[in-house]
Length: 110
Image (cartoon, rainbow, N blue to C red; front, side, top):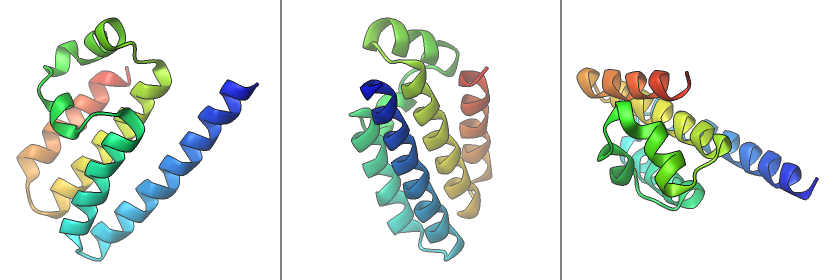
């Protein structure tokens, strides 16, 4: 029960944080959104975004589960952060980069 309550609190915190980041994106406050997103990677997954970008998309899930002991909950958080990052990149006009992040999110949530 304790584990389930902790996970639910983490999901609620993540949802609030993502809503805030998306609000910053809508306002055009891209540097603030990027900083909040980078902090979210570290706060929730204890790694910076660059750590996840270095892992090839087709190996991401297997490597995180097998070598880094990530759980499905971790992967769900990562997928949400990838999606939010793709939204930021799209809003900044970085269409090619945003498509890569959307692809990675789709691969990992399958």
